[in-house]
Amino acid sequence: MRSDLVVDGQVDALPLSGTRVRGDAVTAADAVVVEHLSLLGANHLDGGPLRVDAIDVHTDWRDLTGRQLDEVTAQAALGLMAVHGRAIGTPARLGVPYVSTVAGVVTAQGALAALLAGSRGQRPGSVRVSVAGAAMLTVSQYLAAGSAEDSDDTGEVSEPGVPPPFTALDGVVFEVETLDPEPWRRWWTSLGAAPGDVARGWRAFVLRYATAAAPIPPALHEITRRTPFVDLRRSAQAAGVAVQEVRGLTARREDVDADGRFGAPWQISAGLPAGDLPTLPAGRLPLHGLRVVEAGRRIQGPLAGHVLRLLGAEVTRVEPAGGDPLRGMPPMVGDCSARFLALNRAKRIVEVDLRSASGRSTVRDLVDGAHVFLHNWAPGKAAEFGLDSADFTASNPGLVYAYASGWGDARGADAPPGTDFVAQAYSGLGEQLRPAGEPHAGSLMTLLDVLGGLVCAEGVLAALVARQRDRRGQRVDTSLLSAAGVLQAPLPTVRPTWSRWDMPVPVTDGHIMLAAGGDPLVAEATLGDPVTLTTDQAVSRLAAVGVSSVRVCPDPGELADDPATTGLVEFDGCAFVRPPWRFTS
Image (cartoon, rainbow, N blue to C red; front, side, top):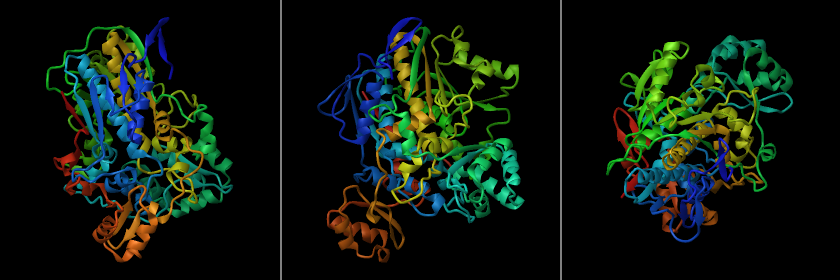
């Protein structure tokens, strides 16, 4: 990111220019906080606990029972391994520091929100972030679905099949993407697939964003394995299906700088002069009194709006006429999907037809009265609708306008759809997620949609800080690809290598996971053959010899009744994750 921003020929400071961050980055999450606040212009000084100006900032790695977690035990105990492993039928470790990265971004959000509150008249105090609460945000839709009162979502794959990616005759591994069943049908039919396999494959394929599983009929995989990649790509293009080769770390290194990093995950630029934000009453959440309009689909945009709502903003969600179709996805809570409510609960809903002049006018009126507008529409749609940032400079010059895209400006006009699994494939993330010796493959957990939404909200908060300081409107651009860069930085030179004790270990009633640094020789000598022991027996025996371990949560829905996490959720027909920040003055 540049050290300054040029607006109308004037050099403007970065959002946190003049802010001091003091303290040592003790954990990987702390390192993300320091790096992100520094990229936003803060001056970092080493020494002592983290402090942003006069605000104490702390990430708490304990769960509600006081148990100390780390990256791998948090992944295990909080449902991430269960979701990542659904597609293969067994819990699986993520080979990237996903919990640490998410916790760092969420903590940076808290620090930015506290800075904004201070600039709006609230006394500075402290921000404390529950790492467990932050991690649970990443599985919130699975938690909601698994805990719904009429749920049959057990996390088990009900039909036999093989998840993507696909492999061509010449060994090329690739992902495909289409949001419409007709291109899917045309493509597979042109390849000679049986209609029943095409239909079953579509259902598994289209539900993979919600279920984290995609049991594609093996016959479809067999078709791609006997077809050269060039022919598969040509036929897919003719049918309207996007194809993305799964890249590895070698290709991904072309995108980094000399330090193996990807630059800032946001582009923030200042606009026209504007007035003050409203004063914040004492005792209110940092975004109280701010109005957000969110036009988001799936996860990335809605999660960004959800985070701003959790921080106190009033969020109005723009949905198509008749409502978002994802509202009807089972399991239901009343008349709405539990998964949908996990990210959209308590938002005000306005239904519009953006194809009509009256619908676009309704959105314009909403945004003219808002402090923030964010969307994740397809490239070019905002300009087509007359709802791009430049369209509001006269009517709402103080607006913070945020666009959460798939690719940013990285891939040009011919890029495939910027969706989670395509972005994972392009970013080379599949090589990092799994250990050496396993095929490259992304996760069917929506890693980048979630992180992309969190990064977007982080950028909005930074822009609000800058808007209040400089009294100018702001534009924020983020993408799934830039979120991947946050997760991958610094880019490793080799894939992880794990022993059996570095992965979930089977026992009679599930799996356990050793904490990082646990001595595998001691574990081996203590447990012998773990499959003869229960979870409680294995964890207790390891604790007696000083080796920390946890039970691997088999499904996030169970977190609603787990003493270690029940205080981090609230129940209203299903379990919803509470805000992970605690602000004190």
